[in-house]
Image (cartoon, rainbow, N blue to C red; front, side, top):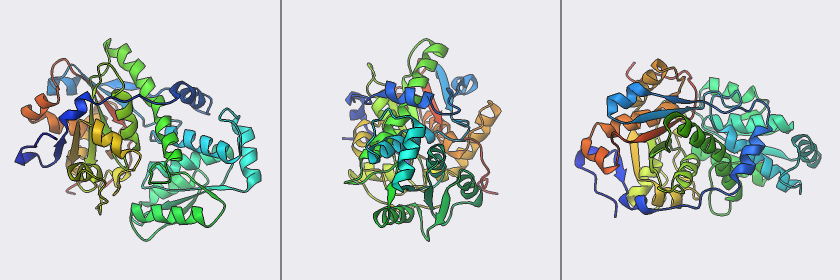
Length: 377
């Protein structure tokens, strides 16, 4: 049974049984990392130490993986999108998962297929970038409330952007219908019963970042991470983080973070089953998702030690801290720092999660700086 949170901590869900939960890790992470290494503009992203934050919170090390320039894009999503598009395209063309990109692009174009997906932010641009590498057309469905700058960024990769009259869940339905009614290959980072193979490849793609992080943590601190904090949208990234850190011996604590206005994971954890929710606007727009991925759900349900909701104002304050520390993070990227500060403000909760003077914390800044409406202004 989950530990009951005190009344003042309605933003928190604790799962003590996750301490003993283990995972087998990922399938073929070495092959995936080698694939990424062959793509244009690949390089490891930096892991930055935040000693002022560690001192402030009484922790040994606080480190943040800066994904603000992954493949020249302002987010990490290209890692999952590239591997998933490559594997899906190769399977569609009946080619092995070792085929060169140029040969794969020729085969996909000859078949007349196009890629289709939906996005609430960085995922759509990542799929569009991989489509551009293969020189294959892509159509990206976006929710009505997506800002113009994000739409323009997706279009800059050569993709067609189509607005739906609704939220992210409505854009999922539009992408599904497009794929069913035409020669389209649906590339999604969320899953549902009957659609799980491609989202599995997405999760596998994220292990490149986690393998990089492991090496960098050892180099900076001489020991492995004891706790990792991951942002949650539909849950695919948090699924990768949980699978990775719960395969370690000893395993690390895994904490998931969501906006208060889009806490589909925490709502589902408290209910014990996936519960779709109606979301509201947040500056963490890449996390503004209303339904947990069915593939991610059992992993997050059993393996996440804590689920935390943060407000836009808490996130904004964390952004300012990151920028002062030389990390050009955006709202989704700052959410893990906002979460760490919130947890550290309650000594009982902090102790329950094993956070103390010997802890090595890894935060993942999953997106770079971007314009947003400052809360309260």
